[in-house]
Structure formats: C-alpha cells, structure tokens
Length: 249
Length: 121
Image 1 (cartoon, helix red, strand yellow):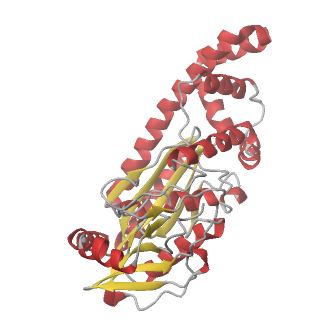
Image 2 (cartoon, chains in turn cyan, orange):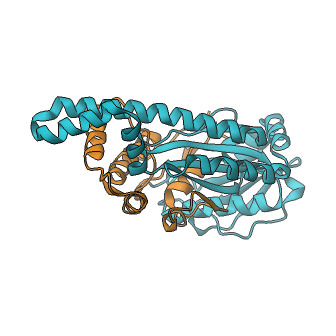
Image 3 (cartoon, one colour):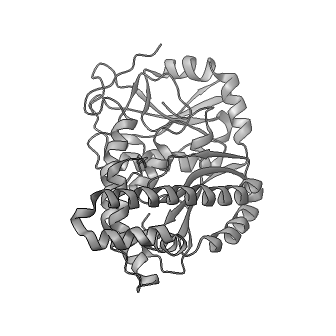
C-alpha cells in the first residue's frame, strides 16, 4: 500500500532501555537505516519511512531481523509489523513518555525471557487411519459411501461430520497433553487459531534458564504423538506475542 | 518452514532458531506486539500470502465432504510413507489451507488494498 504522502512517518520496531542497545546494523523496512529515538531512559528502535512505500515480502523479514538483532543484545518490547507514528516527537511523547510506566513494566516482565513457537501438525492420512481403526461407525460409513458412489451424498456428509467431530476431540486431547507437558517449564502461553490439520499452535514465554527443561519436556511428549502428529518448534524468538496485554489490533 | 519439509518419518520433532517460511514469519510479527495508537498501520498488501493457517470453520458441509473424501481415498494397505508424501505435496488439504489462508489474511487486515490510515488519537 502507499502510505499517506503528506508525511514520511516513523516506523517503530520495538522499545528497549536506552542504555542497553548502542545501535542496530540490520537494514530496516524499506531499506532504511535503523535508529534509536531516546527519551528519558527508554528508546524506540525505529527508522524513517519513505513517503511512497509499498510493502515487499523482504520488509517482513527486515522487521523480524531488526527485532532479532535488538533481542540479541537486550530486552525488547516488540511492536507489530507495520506500526508507523507521525514523527520523532510523537514517538517521544505519545509512546515513550505517556506509556512509560507500562513500557517499563513490560521490559521488566520480559527480562531474560524468550518466545518459542510450538506447532503440532497432523499427518492427515495417519490421523484418519487411526480414527478408522478405532471407530467401526467410520469404517461402516466409508464402505457404504464407497459402494454407493455419487448417490451417497448424505452418507458422505454424515461420514465427514463424524470424522470432523472425532478430529476435534483428538485435537483437544492432544493440545491438552502438549500444553500440560510444556506449561510447567513456561512462564506464559498465547494460543493462535489452528488450521484444520493442526493440533496446536501456541507461543510459549520461557525463561532462558528454563530452556533446557522446556526442551526436555518436548522430547518427552513428542514421541507420544507419533506417527499422527509431528511438532515444529521455532525460537528462541523475541517475545512478540507477550508484549501487550491482549492480542494485536 | 523449509526445514520441516525435509522431514522423514522419524523426524517428529523439528527445531529452527528463526522462522524461514512466510507463514511462520507472519505468525511472529503480524498482529503481535505492543499496540500503539499509530498514525498508520502499514498493511501487508500485494504480498502473496500463500500459507497462513487460517481458522477453518469445522462445522461446514464443505469440510465434512472433504473429510469424507479423504477417508474414502485412504489406502489402508499403505503405512508410513503415504503420510509424508501427502504432507510434502500439500495434497488437497494443503490447497484448501492455502485458500483459507488468503482469506484469513484479509480478515486480519481490514481495508486491504486501500490506504487504511488511522488518525492518531
């Protein structure tokens, strides 16, 4: 999209304590240089935004890379992709000054913390095979729909409805199992909406000193989901899901 | 996640230090973080959002029919290898996911394609 041509704007990546981050070398959104806008002990990691600007895919990576570099140095309160303020003065007053208390509390809360994104993904064929083996009604409907072919519309809907329900039950059970295994090593959890074939998608806030324990928990619980689901873990990431109280816009 | 697609049947736990695929990057930075009264919110427009997982309404006939079809085409004789190929190729489920994805992205960002300018309060 094109940002209003009347202003260049200030793109904000996140907030750090002013004395803890000397500079960021990673290229910013739109290829701009990353700067620190300081105010009374706090600093916004920011860059200029050109008047005519179209988001490119690499801008998403740039946003993340800037956050990751800052996160590698110190505690950072991340902002969502695409946050643009009017001017440096606006950043200083409306953000760093007016919300100082909240920002300081967030920085304190996130000190020493990392985010791990955990996704458990079903193998559809394995999942369905297991449901088929465990539920005679599914097997019976499978046979009758195969036999009747196109004439079996309502039977097929019934089969699908039955399977969808069983998948949902299974998802709930697997998500519970995973969360209860991992929660013990985590400080906080945020859940994301799951796709049709995901058992769980969640971000875990983990203290660096508990990373080993979290990993051990993963190793313990992952084999139990085999071969129906596999687990993907991404991180340690900057704690983007835990910066604010609620979820984004 | 690129690493994930290289998985084998035994690769039930995959780790990556940083997201590599677009969907995983978006999971981390889109709508996540401190919300501030911004002058504008730069939207992710014109970007091919191919693989965002979107919430799919389970209770729809389409979903039922898709599940029924998936159950019907299950080859009971096959064991481990089938699942992996299906995951790798995306299969029809992957396609569905992609369709939902683009819609999901649109839902997330109202005013796609237009300049959505939010005046700061």
